[in-house]
Image (cartoon, rainbow, N blue to C red; front, side):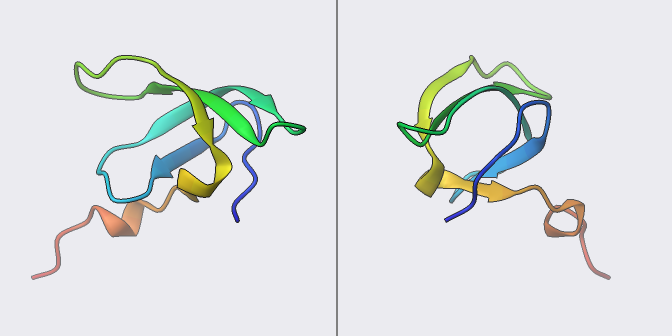
Length: 63
């Protein structure tokens, strides 16, 4: 399980795009996120189990 830190970029499992961690509740293992791009809304009370470390290489196209 990935444990995020405030102001860290993360990804949501199975979804594209990066999010910024705005709040972390270590006890409940939840975080609030805001999207770094696009029209998505704030993601509140997201379980740590749904989070992954952000990796730019995941979004780069290979030739």
